[in-house]
Amino acid sequence: MSVKLRKKKTKKGESLYLDIYHDGQRVYEFLKIQLTKDKESNKEKMRIAESIRAKKEFEILYSSCGLTPKFKKNANFIEYFERFANEKKSTTNYINTLNHLKKFTGGTIKFLHINVKWLDDFKAYLLKRVTNNSANTYYTALKAVLKKAVKEKILQENPAQYTDSIKTNDVERVYLTHEELTKLSRSKCPNDEVKKAFLFACYTGLRFSDLNKLTWGKIQPDNGRHKLQYRQKKTGGFEYFPLSETANKLLNGDSDIINFPSKPVFDMPCRFHYNQVLKSWTKNAGINKNLTSHIARHTFATLALSSGADLYTVSKLLGHKDIATTQIYAKIIDKKKEEAVDMLPPLQVSVG
Image (cartoon, rainbow, N blue to C red):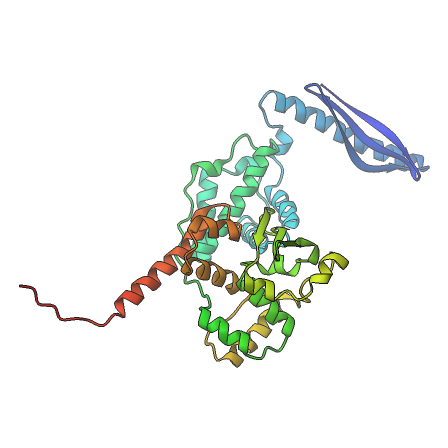
């Protein structure tokens, strides 16, 4: 095992990097430290680079022995979580979790102090301030970052594996019926692009983030219809989706598939204005529901299940990694079945 500090010539001078050889493999790690003609500055940069090299060497040595270096154990977990949250900046769950962690810890907690008791205390803190469902979401984000810390050998094991998850409560899923969709399609909308995009989402289950990034290049002709191929922004999963007749009709720019593959399918406003347009449109249609972008996804799921699609297929169409996530929609359908049966007129029956 060896970790050597090396230089690479560039147009601006010399760039420093680590030449790491371990377990028969060689990797290079660039330090983003540039040497210039300033000798005094270069001395300080070399001192810093050497410190990084020594730390990396200790890190590999400790890792080979199944140990975690002391400097890693003493590192601030909040700073580590913040870096991870910045990578996930499109997901507000991590930002919200970070804010709660800062309030709970005062901004500092060493990795070595994260244990089962600390995690249970943090869960109790969350449950006093947010709903069970939000607490579960934030605690799940925390567990994911701790799992990453184990993978990066900052922690030897994830203490969260010894704690219980936070129980969630069923929440009402607002969705649109076929009759309400018909009303919307026949009503005037302040923004025609929003109208097309929302109805398209109701027949594909696309999230706002994926709808916003949808380009013509992700839509491919397929035996007289179209299929959608895209990577989910939220989960990173690659999805294949055959489009229904209604979804196909909402696409009126077939030539753009070939001529402008990078052109957005819909000219989308920001989410706030998108939801504002939906509210005005719903009012015009006489529908008493607080419409948001995510309701289109709920609508697709309930429509598909109501039309006879099986739970596994709907789960795949929605891009869910766990079918349990899709089962909430099945509960909605079961409830509607019960309501339909209860509406049957009573009959007085005499037997014998």
